[in-house]
Image (tube, rainbow, N blue to C red; front, top):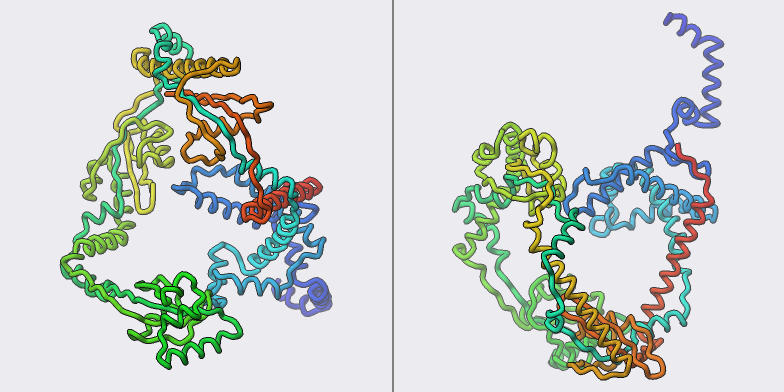
Length: 613
């Protein structure tokens, strides 16, 4: 058979086949052959353009990582996979409509534009220069190829162009900004009468019948949830460090290594700062000549320096160590000898001449002073390096044991206990949802097993077991009667206070005088620091007084009620040249731009033909 194939391949039929392949490759490329046998699966099409399964799954994975990063304790089991997939697909559909719209408007980036964007990204640079190896490694760590990343960047950039274009086109009206600022800066005149709970205590009583009736009407509020008492072992770097031996030689070696860096040096500097303009070089030369002629650095600082905070003090900056000044300034200062003046030093603030006035040093602490700190640092470092190994041993030991005492003894750890843990959690470490789910799993709750070792924080792992399990039950009236009495007393006190406040307001509206300790306030704004928040909220929720007639309101709390009499409302002053006005105007414009962009995006989405596979 092989001989027949060889002969046919060299004959007329073979030549015809080869000729056809050459024509296909030349006209359509090799993708015409490969694509004929395979095509990438699609999850949807948007206006006949595909969303591939590969792109979709990658987007889903990235969204999972983003949501996990937002969790205080990252737990993949807390993610709603179905919702994530739904959200991601909808987002990809919207992005596709925006990309198509951008292409229709001619908003596209060339390959050269993409190259320029990539080379300017800080995450791909070393010392301010593009590093191709870092770029490739970063992209691969994202689970993407270079071509895919370039495609994603191209899409995001043009979409952002549309977003920015529409967002920046938002317009705010001066009338809206003025009106809002007038409301924001509005002041009010009012007075307040406080009614304490003691004034209504005689009107508040709770009987046994009231308690019984409340209990019968709210039995669902007095269910004791299912609970467990749990024992647990916590493995942490800190706990592990307590078991680590650190020799005196190690402490001494660490001290010698750190000693030089522990010497603190501060330098007292003065400077002359001038603008970095076309005359800067001439000005610097003039100052340097006058210094060489014996004039005082401080006098020249007063004459030339544009640093208004230090010029009158002769340019004095005081003592400072490293890490305080701009890097170029610091390098120049710490390269000077005492009394020496630097050459011109350029920073973002301008051009400096720096004089080193004095140097003071503080010697490193002694070994005796630092040994406890160094020992703890060394132990912590050793524990961190050892943590993964010990964690693995603890996981194996706890899995094989039918208690926690055995693995705790093996690892030199303490067995602790927490009571009254519900399915909603309990005190730390049982505030971690993953650990709580493990604790209430059938194997642990009913089978008597230990939980798996659960990472509840950075370098903190916990294994637990149930000590006692209590099913949900109805609490008796005797158990909860005291709580009910307190609750009803509070409710009735609030009702009595509200009723007393209403009576006061009714008397005031009838023109009667109400005696009491009234507190008066004039021209008070919304941020009155000395006024209780409930009072401010009440005052600024009332309508304007008409025809000189006050407007009344009340603020009722558990322990007091306040009657508010509003007498005057003064519109806030608006300065259209102020920073407050400009910020508000810009904010309203951005808000309108965002609204227009959202509406435009929804329009494109509504017009799109979307088919899900």
